[in-house]
Amino acid sequence: MTLSPQLENKFSELLKRYPVKRSALVPMLLYSQDEYGHISDEMIAEIARRLDLNTLQVTETLVYYSMLRRAPAGHCHVQVCTNISCKVRGGEKLWEHAQKRLGIGHKQTTSDGVFSLEEVECIGACTGAPAAQVNYDFYECLTPEKLDAILDQFQAGKKPAPVPHVSGSIHERHPAEVPVISRRFGIKNSRKIEVYRKHEGYQGLEKALKEMTPEGIIEEVKKSNLRGRGGAGFPAGVKWSFVPKDSPKPKYIIANADESEPGTCKDRPLLEFDPHQLIEGMIIAGRSVNSHQGYIYVRGEYRYVLDIVDGAIREAYEHGFLGKNILGSGFNFDLCTHTGAGAYECGEESALMESLEGKRGYPRIRPPFPAVVGLYGCPTIINNVETLSAVPSVILKGAEWYAGLGPARNGGTRLFCVSGHVERPGIYELPMGFNLLKMIEVAGGMRGGKKLKAVVPGGSSTPALKAEECDIAMDFDSLAKAGSMLGSGGVVVLDEDTCMVDFARRIMKFYAHESCGWCIPCREGTSWIKLILDRFHAGSGRAEDIPIIDEAAKNIFGRTFCPLGDAAAMPMMAIVKKWRHEFEEHLSGRCPFKAAEVAVEE
Image (cartoon, rainbow, N blue to C red; front, top):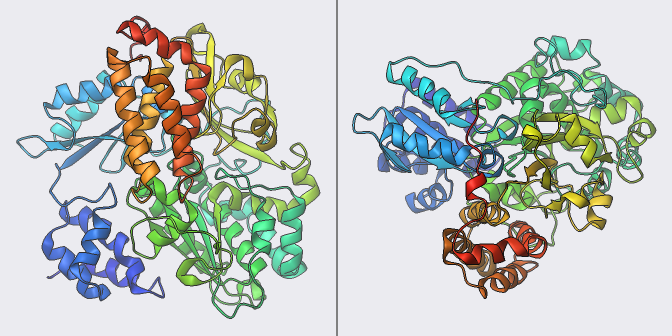
């Protein structure tokens, strides 16, 4: 098969990035699809030949990832998000409108081949809900009328201007905010290395390389009380200390930029507006464990972000911050990006490594843990983008300063993605431990003067809090005591008109869709709970269904190889426990909240 010069060059570049050829598989498939519209049998055979694989190995990997297509899509592939943040701002009405406007349904194409349509899970635009993508471009804060105007331009052969930033991430600072990792947001050309260096950029790296030992770096990160911002909250410095110093194998640093937790969109602006901060953090992490290779695993939907990060990496090489003998220190570090292709499961660190190795994103059984046996069987550190982006400030300004920004054991600040029924959805950098009720006020208060009903404090996997539970400090320990989690910092605010049965139904639809299918409790349990909730909300629920939902969730919890099962079970158990009366009200045969549904607003 003869490839275009552009694709040929891309394939050649990909093969140079990895010590194992198969790692190039998923990026090759996605870039092929971008060029040809789908992945043909001929392309499967060509990629298999280049990677020394058979076609079955390529195909079984291909079908795992939701973004990869075997059949052609329309020239304009429209994807409408209906997950929780978009749902509560009118995403489902937008989806219904898109179907009527185009005259097609889910994964269908118009007869002229111009449009194809797909209902998708969270696309990382939660503070710009409801949102959609057309061929990777983001369109946010949509209404049916705005969507029509966009589609009209595509129909006329024009490309409407996308919204290439997270809505709300660039805003007038609230006095309560403490800008640390977001302090360069809003500065013109903040992603460029010249601007980054004018604002303390790479000074932390210089200090780490010239004034500190690897052990000293780890101790400083430990003392800072920097805990993992991806969800679990495990102390970053402790994780780094687990890497065996005497291992003869290569060591790897991976930035997990596969943020797919509904309600969460904080890594996207960090990558878009300040990619060098992440690069600097990764080099410092590499120095601390004597690693010389890093990978940034970026979710497939963030294509324009991937291009921005690739550009920043090129700049870092050109200025001597990557490559050989960085700043004359004798330390070498190489870095490149790697694209995912649509799989929430790949946010789990062991599944991410499987994906990076060119396989399905199935979780690994642990132990061994990645710090000892990780990527390619070698010691590996995996941290979230937000975690690694905080490292330069910790090193430059000191652990004591950073730890002092938050309460005990919860150092620093946090990027909170506040979405849902608030007046000013946005991404706000606030001190760890900031009060949740005050956070809602920072985001402009309740939308339309409605009463607060519930808050999802850390993404869809975290148990929701009732209004009377929301006078609480937003840190890992306080929320754990309250029976919930800080998670990824995705704060979804729900008003009095929200049907919690319907909300639970949308959460379970997501987890049933994203379950990798390996574990029976997760694969079967999520699907069965979704079916019961669908029936319940449609008016055919039975009283005995209520304890069945709770019991099924409990039988998933703690019985799966990875946390996805727990992520599905925990919010279900909380909703059934705290809003059981709403389930009982549905037994009359209709949803009591349907009359109060809020129409999509301008």
